[in-house]
Image (tube, rainbow, N blue to C red; front, side, top):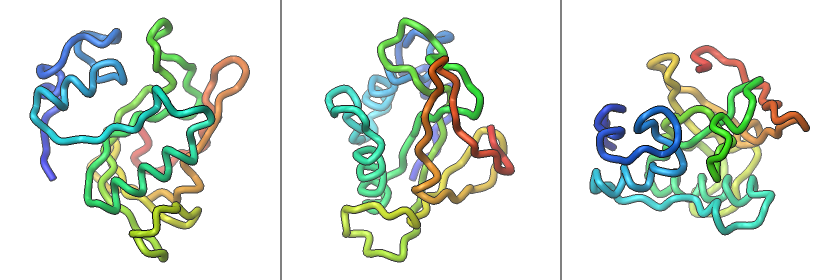
Length: 155
């Protein structure tokens, strides 16, 4: 893996519609290309909704291959989109995801509810372990996140 400071990533991209060069869905691929990093993004622009199952399948595939992920998440009680007017915006946080544990073969493309991933937060320096079946949430009719995850280090 590689560690790149947030400022270096912001310096490698263009304004995406948030605060200055804040990393968003609209400019993260530009940053990764300018940093000369190889990546395979999740195809959220073209896959039909709902996308949770496809995303978890993609997530497991990437982690099982040893690839790190920069995922964009909703926070509990957050109102979305954070930046109205952006084409993709039901998230408010970017975190690293860098490990997977499973009782099932990692070459099995199916994700299982009891698969675990390992991620970081910007609230601590610890690693956090989440079951795949705890990752999906929804929003209310007034666009407020229904996420219920509060754990030590929660952003």
